[in-house]
Length: 93
Length: 150
Image 1 (tube, one colour):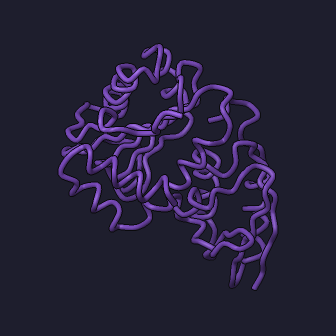
Image 2 (cartoon, helix red, strand yellow):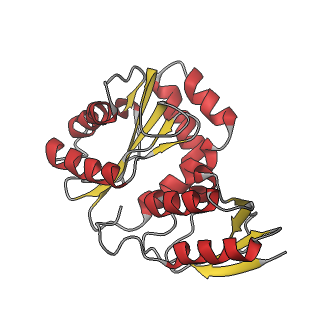
């Protein structure tokens, strides 16, 4: 199954606004995607509560999984969202 | 350190026409508890955050929050609304509202709280228990047990 290890770019971590942006992007993909961390059960990337609950900090590595037609494209798109520091232009929350 | 939440920070009959009014009502409790020094300043910070992206989550939850220079200690306030308050979630208004306030320059502690809270809120049992809690003390006990001791 295609997977991708990505370092979280947002300094505040994958919480609140960065998490919401990621979830929106995940929901827009053609295939289901999961997100996990080492030692943590992967969760549905389209569930904001589950994603926030992962508690992925800035600089921490997460693992994305996707399956089916277009999986690699979905992973590419989500990797970009995750690597972006969404806090640079605004006050961190 | 001070408790993250206590019974004075719980409003089981939260009102407010919109999320800003509801948030203001909860924030007043933070002022009374000495956790927030400037109500308007704090609300402006919460509003700035809320305007970036609404904090309504699926399943009737609103989590307004801000890191703010007007906050003296990490604090969680909880409000339960019979009518529901629109926090911008796609699936409808929130009846469970958590206001998270963190001091400026503080660490990532409030994000850990948010994450822990989110992990519990995935479970229907926890939400049901919050909706059924008979009084503020029961809510505090529930949150301490389910969220803070995990």
